[in-house]
Image 1 (cartoon, rainbow, N blue to C red):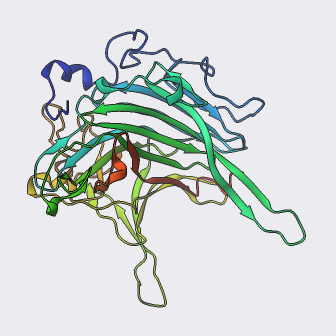
Image 2: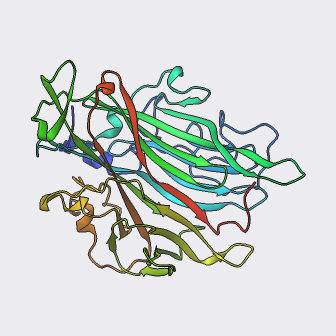
Image 3: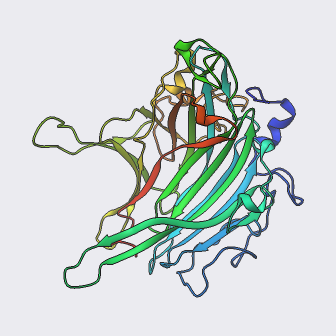
Length: 409
């Protein structure tokens, strides 16, 4: 069943970070998991690798993830399964090889999966009680990894060449990169959503969602779909997945975070000029060629004296724009001042809070910015989408910019 209305009985619990004082095995939230003073039992840590000590996260086993990758880079974070948002990550900290720990995110989670169909109906808001629809993972669903509380897979995988430099007269300088991967699956209607975060050994983060499962089977006219099955008797209706992420950055600590936009006008000319816009108040923005954003700590510097930041790139979106009553779809990035009640990008359930992210932007001065990233994918069905439907992915990239003074290899 797809949900766009939230049962009242769930709201008081779902709006909290945890529910109750303790979580039984398989519970939907960690519910007051104790603080840890060491790597949690079963945490994935490479044998023999070392990294500087990171600040102690506010969670313990089995909610602590502590991974040292082969190049010595370390990621530490906590996970929880919230009733509303589903898989939520907190206290995300990166330690580069031979470097010090750098806090990146206070928290991150999905903020909506909005699915409007091309004929105008139906129009779903798939996040509302996402945690209650978590899929129990089998060992085959988490190859080479560790299942946490049935619903979460923690594993590592290759990310291909970290670098390859040709050196005449000498062996090539090259290495294969690795990344920590944390994911869960959720069954919403016909779709199974794979919600994944990948944390690379070079400090990059890739949030993405894969849609698999089954097509809806909604029949329509040829102007709104594509013929599937035998002949032309069934036209599968096309639709869009507008996926929003909420990212509460704490770059190198809670204070001094500023959001900047970078543009490089000059297409069709011999020169391009860097243009920087600082968001001092709540704002919204759209993607554009060569445009990116960053969250920068105005006080912290790397060894070269440059300000530490993480860059957000969102160049792969289909850029869906809905009607007036779906104004939340009309931007690709929102920057808002932190407010605890602002949980979802649309159909926000918190009493006394605005209903959607476009209404969160009121021009308030930014002292604790939260970013909302919107990535769209237009799904035009094909014969190959027959059950089980191949996974199609959408996401974006968060890359360290001057967090280190050299390649973290």
